[in-house]
Image (tube, rainbow, N blue to C red):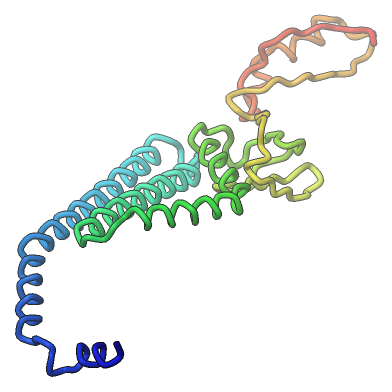
Amino acid sequence: MNRMLLHLTMPENWNLPALLRDWREDTMVFLRHDVPKILVVVMASLVLIRVLKALTGKIVALHIRKVPPGFRTQQVRTLATVTSSVGIFVIIFVAGLEILALLGINLGPLLASAGIVGLAIGFGAQTLVKDVINGFFILLENQYDIGDNIRVAGVKGTVEAMNMRSTVLRDEDGTVHIIPNSEIKIVSNATRDWSQLTLRVTVAYSEPSERILMPMTSSETFKSRGSIASATGRWSISSK
């Protein structure tokens, strides 16, 4: 048995011209049939990536032109960047699978291994994934903006920063709270569109009712306050 193996591996028994001929034929077949298909896949992927980047850039530019400067610009850019990155990853992943299939590589074991690895990563980073997914929908639905006064996860304060993973609030005491987006279940926004104010004014009993209510109901009183839209509501006098 040892002599036979030694005999088969001796250089003089190799048919080098036949090996070179087979290698040349396989190379020519690969260059004629497979390389053009691979180039088509690569070119199509590059075109799709450029179209995706141009589309997200146009959306961001259109939004910035339509809204006041600084209004939700950071959120829109973050959302566009995430969408573009996910789209590019999907395009590259699908293109890679197509190229591997053209090279004759069996994708079954590879996909099974990738699925196991992805499952392990998903279990290990499920909190991070929940943060990112919830942050994506917060940005998509425009639940709050930077500068809004909100209450989330039992904390009330002004939004100073927000990203895909967390929201930063500063409360009335100046304390900064960093809240993971996965902890945000209910958002109470006190500065969205309009809010209501209960104003209590103490006056002397001798003051006439008309004199008390006139400055309160006059729109001129509130025109000097840029943050107050109107003084509509119910006004009453109580002896408490």
